[in-house]
Image (cartoon, rainbow, N blue to C red; front, side):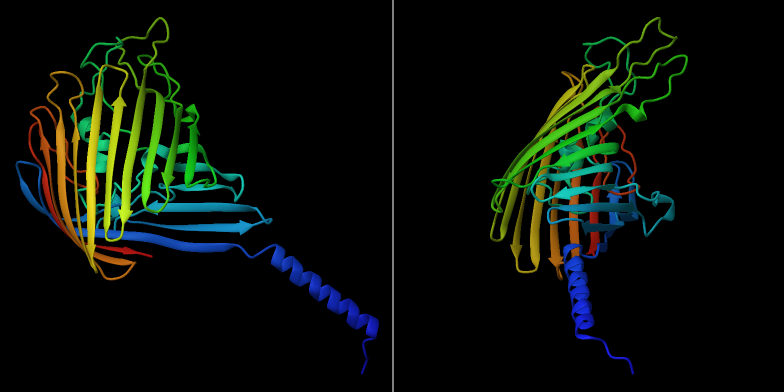
Length: 380
């Protein structure tokens, strides 16, 4: 038998110690599988016809990871995809939701590139609380209700009321670079920029326009009180319709929006307010607001929200409201049962309907869609 000398033992011990030190300095990467499934049996109406449907509400799954490369720097990634358990035709392409790669520093903040929600969409505070169809943030504050009502015709003349299409700002943007600041004094700042890579291809009757998008937000949240402000602008989001090839490039219209949130969470209570303005730059502009609240009694949570969008221009008669009430039964942090009723009330020219589910029927002008949901949400 061959024996190891004392010097050999010391050398092996030193090597083992250096290996342990290296392992501590460079931890193994963490990878997490996560997702949400949210579905409901729904009795709905488009204001004319009653239906019964099984609805899917943005069910999704994803994988995310982080690898620390130094004491203050990590590489991060996320790939997230939407799917529909009840209807495979509604399932999405891989990585259609927030999917990115980036760097994260505790002292300098986080920088990502890929696809991600714009800061205005992400700003929720304690205002966005509802499940199912009856959540007012998307339909009211982000302008989808008015967008469903607006004319699609745009003429190349600025400042003529009623000639411009409207746009919604519930934006998950591709080709995005986004920065998140570290939290300081309970404040987080976000900046996002998307270049004009997605600009349409020029054709004989419609030249290509830059469609770059920029957005930013600032949010304060100390665990009890929260408030935030966000702004967003997309160049040429509303493009002129041109019957013949123009002699010179005619600019489109920038779609601009602002959003403010206020809220609080104290014990069993949660409440929030949100306000927004959306301006097509082509003669249409709305002012929108919503209020929400929730109260927990053990596993039972009572919720409600109400929101309103103004006319897009004087005399348009395309204003609308959305009201919803909900009862949740929280079995644990992963599993919630819910029942909900909501109604959209459209003025005579408004055509708003629910967009939270995959296949709610469109509404005719002046009709009032309703939805009664009995559903389940599972998070993992």
